[in-house]
Length: 345
Ligand code: G3I
Image (tube, rainbow, N blue to C red; front, top):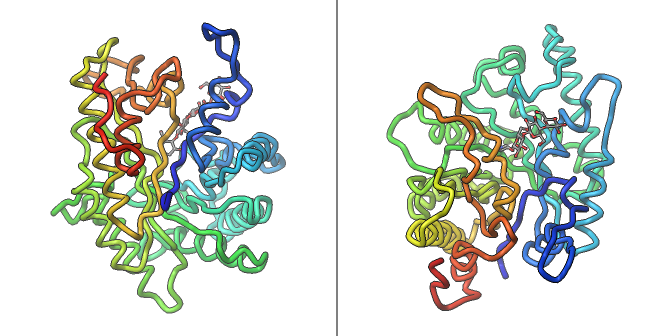
C-alpha cells in the first residue's frame, strides 16, 4: 500500500469491551489495529488537553495512545500543535493581552509539545483551522497579513524538530470546508490557498509541508474529482495533500436504506480514488471508524430550524456493531484491494 489509512481515536475507548455472540471482546482496539496503519488522537494532543492551565501539563493520555500505536505497528499523526480559535484556546492564554507575552507562551507550548513527542509523531496538524477566523490570538499576533501567528507556529515547530534531528517529521496546515473549488475569492478554500502561496514564496519560505483536508461532509459534499482540482493547485505550490478527518453524514433516518449506504460507499470510493490518483496525496484518515463513536452524534448545528444533535449520522466505515459497511468495501476497492464494488447493504 502506497498510501496511509488512518483513523482518529478516542483514547478512553481503547480499553473498552463489547458484548458479542461469542462473549466479550475488545472490538474497538482490535478493529483499529487490524484495519488502520495510522492513529490520530482525536482530542488527547490538543493544547487544551495537554496544557489546560498555566501550571498543568498532561501527556499521559496521549502517551498511552502513542504506545498503543507502536505496539501495533501504526504511525501516529499528531493533532494539533496550535488551534487559534477562542473556544479551543486555554483560558490563561485568552487572558493575556500583551502580544509579546502571548507569543512567548505559544512558542514555549509549541516547542514543549514537539519536544515531548519527538520522532514518535510522524506528522503533525501543526496548525488547525486558522484561516478566516477572527479571535484573540489572531487579533494580537496576526500582523499585517492576518496570519503571522500561523507562520510563527510553523517556523517554531520546524526549528524545534530540526534541533532534535527529526527532519522527517512533517508539518501540515489542516482545515475544514476547503475541499471544493470556488470562484468566490472570500471562500475559505481560496483564503487557504492565498496564505499558503504567500508562505511558499517568502524567503525563507514558511516551512509548511502539506495541507490536511478534513473532509467532513454529507452526500452532497465535494466529489473526489472536485477535491482533486483543489488539491492540484496546492500540489503545484510544492505541498503534499492528505485527507485527515473524513466522514460522510447520512442524515437522520434511524435505519439507512441500501440506496443510502450505496451512495455513501460510492462517495468514499471517489475520494480515496482521488488520493490514489495524486502521487502527492499521502493518505486518507477517517474521523473515527465505528458509527458507534462519532463526534457527529454530539454535534448540535444549533441554527434556526435545527432539530438538535442527530443520533444516527452513520458516517463511518464500520457500523455500530463493528461490522464492515458497504463504505468499507468502497475504500478497499479504491485502494485496489478489491476488484468488485462490494455489497450494497
Ligand atoms: O471529556 C469531557 C467530559 O468529561 C465532559 O463531561 C463533557 C461535557 O461536555 O465533555 C467532554 O469533553 C468533550 C470532548 O470532545 C471529549 O469527548 C468536549 O466537551 C468536546 O468539545 C470535545 O469535542 C471534540 C471537538 O473536536 C472539540 O475539541 C470532539 O470529540 C472531536 O471529535 C472534535 O474533532 C474536531 C477536530 O479536532 C478538528 N476538526 C473538526 C473535528 C470535529 O469537530
